[in-house]
Amino acid sequence: MTCFSRRDFVKTILASGLLPLAFVPSVAEAAPEILETASELLRREPLRFGVKADGELWLLNYEPSGDRYTAYDVKPEEIAEGDLHWDLLDRIQALREWICGFSQEFDDESRWLEDCDTDEVYEFLSTLSPEEDAKLRQELREWFTHEVSYEEEDGNDIVRPIDGRGFAFQFFAFDVDGELLDELDIDLIEGDQPGSNYRGAQMNGSVEDAQRIVRERDLPFIFEEMEC
Image (cartoon, rainbow, N blue to C red; front, side, top):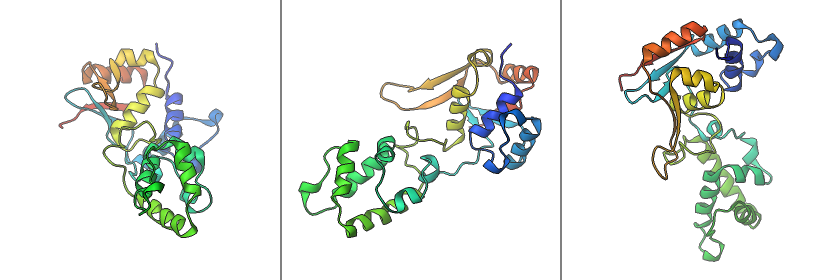
């Protein structure tokens, strides 16, 4: 029998950011009532996983914020003033690409970035005048308030899932053990075709069988068929 328990699920909810830090207990205190708190925040309990006709899984009651601050786990103060940290640039490819585009707004083509390598982008930022830096910060703050683009959606740099499909993939990839995945007949797909950055969890068996298994394990989530 799988070792994945209700207590493990509590820790999954906490790690996924679905419960505010104010409600986070110590691991020793983690108990079923925390699931009740999470379900109050989600407005329903248990978590509902929708299964599309092709088996793709979505968490139906996940209500994420799609702005880039949330998706990339960036605080506004990290870009408000001072140096943009090398580590921040290094972990977000889309940010480096945006700065490359910004560089090409200059009339002086010698300042244009030809490569979005972290070191080159970091060096470019050090050459900006105070006025240029202020312009970059203003436009960058605006960029972070927008939702991620289609091209960014399945990138590896996004920290918090931006939709129910992304949550389902991370949940089953990192918080559910292999034995339970096998029982539920769920595969993890990373790249559905050559060159693709698609990531998703796919159920190959029936929804009815999956429901029977989670009921037997007393796991607090539901699988149901999605119409589209």
